[in-house]
Length: 167
Image (cartoon, rainbow, N blue to C red; front, side):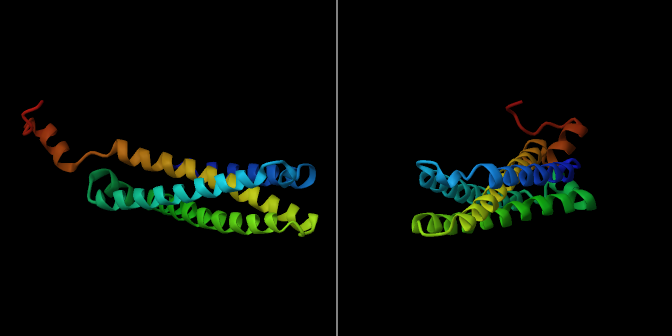
């Protein structure tokens, strides 16, 4: 998880560059069928937020396991995990709200090009950041889930006892 700050920095810089290029050269809201893309992004971000909520509740249920205790006891890991979790949720909610506002402005049709271009650029920036944070959150959650071992299993293996007859 130590690479998350570097990953976030690179994601923000790349998102700023891409949104600036789109602001200057490519007003994507002019493309045919763009309203369907907005609907798709709204659906994707809403489903992702639901997934985050489910992941956090699963993490809460395994909070007393060895791996999660190690992460929460290490000050740096804890700060990174909280940063990734909270940032992914907040950016997801901001993206959903921005997408709804963007849909309303797009459907209106009488909004000036300058305002639409600014909203377009901010929306692209948030979308890129959201996708980056989503990737980082999923990666972190999978790291915790797949590296997770129950403390009792470790003690049984280390003591030579096997209490599960299926082995």
